[in-house]
Image (tube, rainbow, N blue to C red):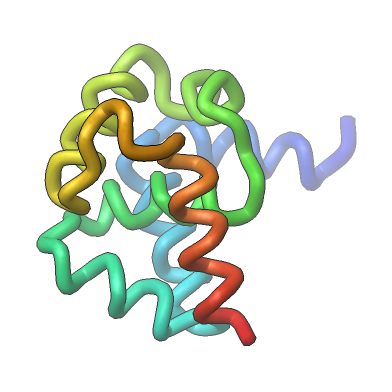
Length: 103
């Protein structure tokens, strides 16, 4: 088997660690994006979740990574960001913010 696939599968077994490591890797390359999310009181896990959206993952992909907690986490993040259900798609919102802060 491909060692990369094996490493990713191992990392994904611990969902909390997976999301925290995603956040940590973003902190190195995109500190402004992480700082923006921190201002809303998001946890490290929630920020890692937002990073997955920011790089273009769809909700169903993220759900495959973190399981059924995807919908609950998405709702909690929307609430912290001040987004109502009808305001915008969370994926589009986070990708727009990420693009603006990556310039």
